[in-house]
Amino acid sequence: MLYATLMPFEFGNQGVAQAWSHFTSLTFPKMGASARQQWVANILLFVPLGLFWTAWLSGYVRGVWGHCVVGLFVALLALATTATVEFLQYWLPRREPSLLDMSGNLSGGVLGVLAWFGLSGPGRRWLSLLRQGGLAALWWALLSYTVVYVLVAWLPWDFLLSWQEVSAKLDSDRWGLWRAPVSEADVGQWWVLRSMVVMITAPVGILLGWWLQRRAPALRGFGLLVSGAVPALAFGLFVEWGQFLTVSGVAEGGSALSRAVGIVLGLAFFAMRHHLGPDQLRHWARPLVATSVVPFLLLLVLINWGGKGFAMETGSVLAKLESLRFLPFWYHYTVPEAVALGSLIFHVMMYLPVGIGVWLWRWGARGITPRRGLWLAIGVAFLLALVMEAGKLFMAGLRPDPTSVWIAAAAAWLGWQACGVVWWGLRGPIERNARAMARADRSRGRAEASRQRSVASGSTYPGVESADEGFVRGGEGSTR
Image (cartoon, rainbow, N blue to C red; front, side):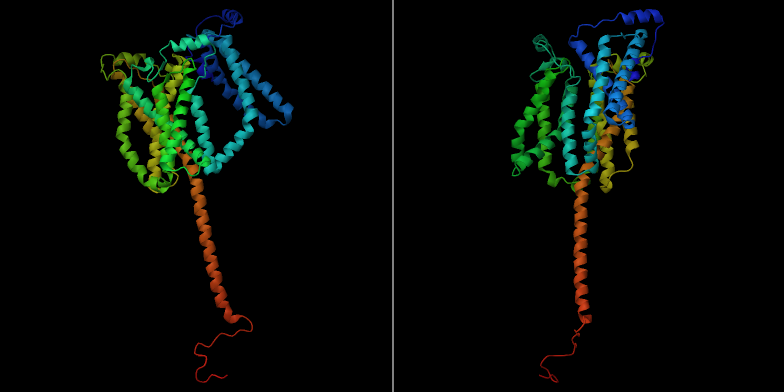
């Protein structure tokens, strides 16, 4: 948090008295659309501070008053932290102390406190359910994914609050029936992004198919797809409508259709789930990964190097290297928060398939949870990002960002862990079925053994003698 608020750590030589005079003369600025975007970003920045400090200190107190003291202490800690940070920003370039930022940070800290006290109990139950695995855990994981999907799509939640702002949005270039004018420049990247939207929306379609079949168990196959088409389109329009109602959001009909296609893809996967069990998928895991490597690499090249038409420029390589800033997230600091957040999410989605691919490759060999390969996924993503960013040195109009290699490594780790969570959810019912079959086999074995023992014990039962094998009823030597 201090790292994000005190970048770039290039302090000036102004005097403390001058800084204090400037700090004490601050006033609340008018909160326009851009200021509101900054204010919401500051709230989100300090929510973890309030959440984690409250979670830690709450374990040492008991009772209502103890928790009240903890909440008050964490709120004062958030206030002291934001006041210190804003005071120090007087010495930083391109930074300016602001009471609006302080109010946002304090609100975020208090919101974190309230979130812990209000959601810690349900959160613990939710995590306990997820750890158990099984269909119930998978259902709640998909539901949580859908909620997070919508919330992330609307970040930084700088919603329009007046008709004047709505009118300004209508006159802007940040919406379009198919494509927004603001995204007309990068046609190839736009289509790549729409393909990524289709893939990340597919889990929402799985949840929708599951819900529809709960409501109407008779729905199967094509009927399930038809029944889910309208909700799929409605979901896509709903998300894009939320994008339109934010200052920094870009609303496009093409994006709404991409989200609807992703949901239909998830519906198709759910409808074919009996033919796509783990045993069937395991045999296709490695061929799928192998055939996806070349298209994935081509997409990486298109996204990273194709922004300016693959125009080579070797004369400015040394100048780019000299001006390169290796401080992590430096270039995120120099752009607006919405742009920085969008870039972060974009790079995470770009390298997330690396972790997924390595996990599937390791899983496809034996069909069990991979124990090794995580560091391989991280290393591959790191090297790929390093090559992509180094290649930008030779491309006209492009600038490498060293932070991308660290984001790529984190994205690969996230992809690996996501696969593990999904497999954990699927493995629960599989293992329960296997245990049930094993118990049934043991029960049949015990019943057979008991029957054989009862037959064998007939000859030793008191008062009963075993029959002579040579005796024939009614034969010679028999008596009446």
